[in-house]
Length: 350
Image 1 (cartoon, one colour):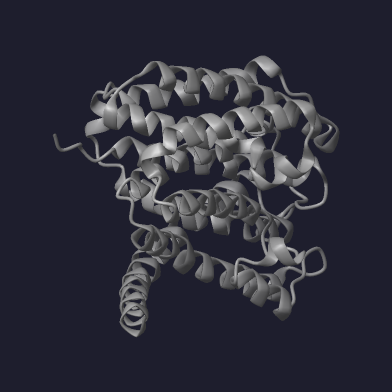
Image 2 (image 1 turned 90 degrees about the vertical axis):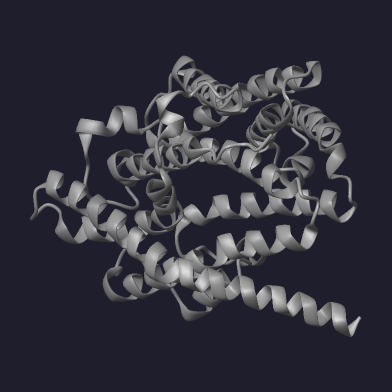
């Protein structure tokens, strides 16, 4: 049986990205007082929950990465991840660096060394500040890719369900008991989301089993636990209060959406083509924050805040489309070809 393309994932990607954008533009930038001079009280209250869009990204990643890895081909997996991550990141990081130099002062600054380290994806390991704060989630993603790569390298992808069970159990234990080293190595703060996404892929591909139902129940419980704990940490940081019921309800909605996708119950939504929205997501996520705040700080209060926010959002979306269409697609094609040829040469030498 040939599975259809899951158009819904493109829509979910876009919605997750927009949630993060509004979290930054309408709440986070001004709430902490260290990034943006422009408040946007009209959307601030709902937008403060938009950080959960990143958790939705991790669920999507769990689903898609396991789909990619299911071929049990480490080389193909590695190439697909490099091609997916690098071209857009290199372009967006470069743009953010140049714009920071041009208009970022005095609030924002960047150095050539910082930029070069960022371009290697090693800033988190080397302790160098990211050019844009949103890059933190890329490092989490890369850790997840490395974990899947180990499973592929051991040729144990058929045992992924057992791996997910162990990861979830260890993560829950580490979170509850505060085992900091394990929490860092196994990215336990977000293990529930990756596990849930991967399990929903297994449900979509092979159907429900008792183990998969237990995995999803455990992932939902751990996701709510970690999300409430994280919201409590954010409250003093942003001088606000988060409703635990709302936080958990949003996570339940994420799980419900994936249940509908995994069981092919999305109806008309699943038949529509959301590809264009999906292609905007990655460059939009990488570009919007720092550049947006720099525009806010230059334009406000001279320009109406509604015009500033919505105009900046339109600029970010249109720029993201151009980056994807004119840079990311052709560059990704060349990179994929180059990497494939390099692997072939290495195999020949060996």
